Amino acid sequence: MVINQFMLLVLLVTLAYQMLYLLTDAERMRPVMMVHGLSILGFLLALLANYRRHYLSAALLSLGVPMMIQVPGVTYMISADSGMHLFLLSSGVLTFLVFSNQLRWLRYLFLVVSTLLFVLLDSFCTPEIAAVTLPAEQLRVMFLLNLVSFVLLLYALSTLFHGQLILQGGRIERQARDLAHLANTDLLTQLPNRRRIITEAQRSGLFQGVVAIADIDHFKAVNDRYGHACGDAILQKVAQVLQHSIREVDRVGRWGGEEFIFLLSYSSAEEALRVLERVREQVEATEVQFEGHAFRVTISIGMAVMDAERSFDEALREADNALYRGKRQGRNCVVTEAIAY
Ligand SMILES: Nc1nc2c(ncn2[C@@H]2O[C@H](COP(=O)(O)OP(=O)(O)OP(=O)(O)O)[C@@H](O)[C@H]2O)c(=O)[nH]1
Image (cartoon, rainbow, N blue to C red; front, side, top):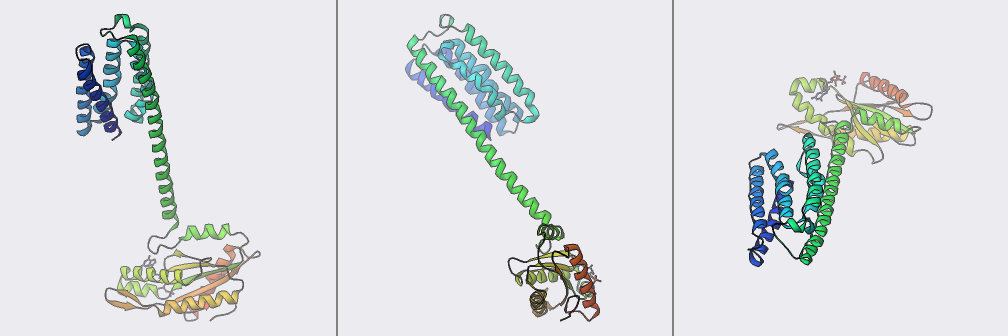
């Protein structure tokens, strides 16, 4: 893509010069026009190679033709006083555009060859031995034009690399965000997964709140009777209900299997119990549609307070014990260490 754009640009500039010489000084500039003609042929071949996906040939032609044929050829014809050979100094930067990292030896080769060529042309191509004799004033104007073009070319290349860097940075940032999302999200329910919840609970430090574990009742029977896909649909629906039944400051995640976990920042256990009781009722009242059938499930919830004296792990153990008791007491209930609703 970049080779194509670069080639088209050089081709257009060369064609423009060719037209200018043809219309103004065709007789005198004939040797230069021959070099340009040869270069145009090379550029067309480079474009063709690129189109046919022969990328190495395209890369070699796209840098080889201007650096090894056009610039040295024209400099030799009209002398180094034209400043044409300055463009050879940009080859070091251009090689990064044309050759991939696997071909970096070609970058060094082009850099060395074009620098040597620059020194040779600058030392030996004087106006006295030039095949085309141009007035000193015209050579001076050409030198200035070539110098400005050379600086603009370097500026354009820096802008291009800078733009590519910004684009790449944005892409890496997006990929990192996507990866973090994938690593922290449960695929089926799209809730935060166990790892995310643990990280958040540990990050909260002396967090005053409630940990609760909710477990779908008799879920194995649903799976066995209606199939795993039906079980998945129920898990997704229950996850939605749980997510919508808590405040933004609270968290609910999938703990694993048919278990969900809550991190609630309520000031008292009674308040948290009221909220969890409402969650339980909402799940009970929700109808899950699957392949034309309607299903209802219930959940049992065990909860425990987490504070400065009771760590997340301890509170989690207690919530698990409470849940176990809730299951034994008949399910579809919210249980703490002391009270069952
Ligand atoms: N469809 C589906 N089923 C799952 C998934 N993860 C776990 N399960 C099933 O959840 C069921 C859990 O069963 P049990 O632990 O025996 O508990 P239960 O049948 O809900 O009974 P109680 O908890 O005592 O009310 C098992 O059949 C698991 O295969 C899942 O991602 N999708």
